[in-house]
Image 1 (cartoon, rainbow, N blue to C red):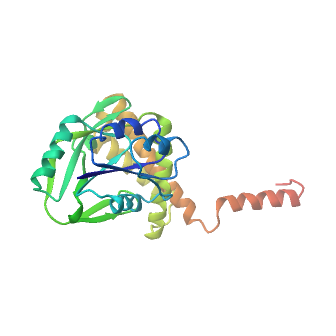
Image 2: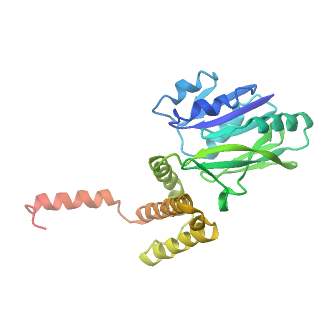
Image 3: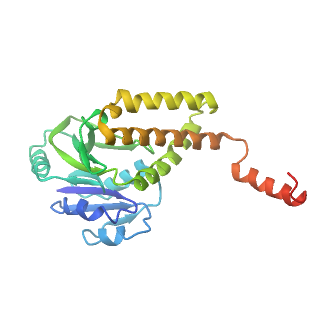
Length: 267
């Protein structure tokens, strides 16, 4: 028996095709992070198990999914991923042979409407398929990883990952991700952010995304993706700087307004 766990938040434009690609599974579980659109309504056409879990922590959401799963095997998907027909057949074969405890699935990535195959997108392996009895849980609020006992396998066929649909989607996702990342860095006692540290991080990330990972050498799409990845990282550190301040910025502005009123707007 196979259970498929899908994490969602405001995915009404993507969720239908995702669930259609796994409707052959024995069970589908949707863990929804308090969507404000029609995502839960659409998901209920495919499964009765639509669970609202209002937390940004990916490990908590993924672990809730496997707690709910009744299947011997569990497959995790995001709403922008699709199980292609060759992969479906391969997963069924893996379940029948029971040679592995966990399986890494490769992804074919479509960004800005074009399939790419460079740098981080060339060998994009995700450990997402588990035998439930050998699974040890997910760890990490963001960039979560899984623990399991036993042998890890790798698929020959791939998921299709339809990401980078538009700038708004990328920026909004980066803003949400940066909140978690900045808080984790603060809790880890990251050194205070300063002008030179921002500059060092910026130069390092431009080199990492554009040169090391090859974005600058893969046309317009590679260039855009690299710059957006740099933006995402910088936003995380800007949030960290805010968190490190002795007084919240909004409180400083309240004090300025109060002083303006008190001093008859002499500034």
